[in-house]
Length: 224
Image (cartoon, rainbow, N blue to C red; front, side, top):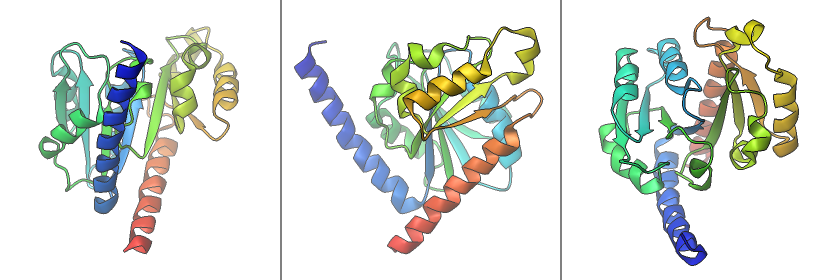
């Protein structure tokens, strides 16, 4: 793709993202864009999160994948309303895709919207969806060099989640190295460690979500 065409595509996406963001702001919906490589545990984490949020916060998910609806089906089984976007080969979601999926996701009767992007640490980082913030995930099974190998996404993510920490005793994974790399790329980012299997770290993750949602509601109340 030549540069003029790429800029035109991104400009159109940014316009759609602004429209999405305005709608989310008016409705008071907190929207997260979760980005990671395949197999990092996004779906498993969201299922565990949904179980903890049940009856406390109205949550839903929009899931992007190249093929199949398997991830959305898993989330529905956990009690989370989920809509699958099958991209048919595209390596990322864009703002237009998200806008078209909203009516199928339960929005606007949603406080918290998870967008599980296509498993890819490169393409999704360039596309604003209108989300409140990006969450980058790296699992202990992937190796601790991911932030420096894929700096674009980790520098743009407000939160980095280190997943599958229950496996740390069995792996050569340097957690402090991840922290140092993220701090170099984005000093304001938070790094949390979680295990969806054991529940370790979920309390801090849920606390972050709740605090961010309350902050957005306060801003919306002042604006009105």
